[in-house]
Length: 240
Image 1: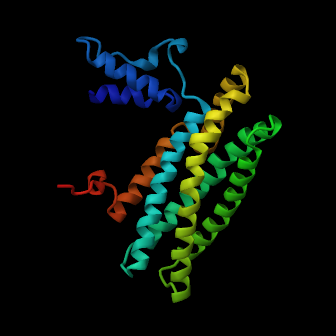
Image 2: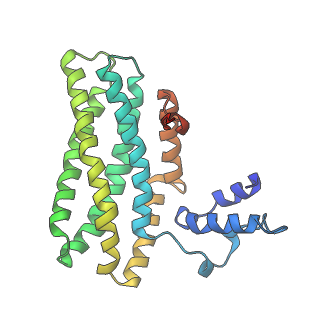
């Protein structure tokens, strides 16, 4: 894809990203049409990403933070040095974007509707309990990672906190992606479903600016680079 096309796509709303990207690929395959911008299309032609898809994209960012946590935990276990401020930065992103924004969206918009519909209420209760547990862990990690002078007790506690957080959040987000989010469409009207997408959009822009999600992804990528875990190819196993 040409650089001009990428620049044009950057101005599009991220909730239209999947649709716009598909169109860009198709246009690029037709001579003379590759430079057309999808952003200029009529709104009826742009299918926005639904609220559950939006939340799933944000789970992708969460997963990258879990990878950072995995790496830091291993470094601590092996008594290997690494920039502790990178762990603090990751925990702060997790607090501001995942806990204070993403999870609040779930708690304010999704959970009450499931309770009103008397659907998956046990799951919702468990998810909320885990949100609260995660916030307590995040607060402790932020405090512990503020200094490089860790005592032996601090060192062990940090390892335990990282392990506990990841052990909880991998099944947590997987259950949301495969059970809660798919069921959400069935318990709300089409109008309400569409309105929630607009509400998510406004809330994100109000809290983080126009390109809040992309900015957070960039910050996570910077942390990965500092820790030496950014290049995807390094995770490919050597299989003869």
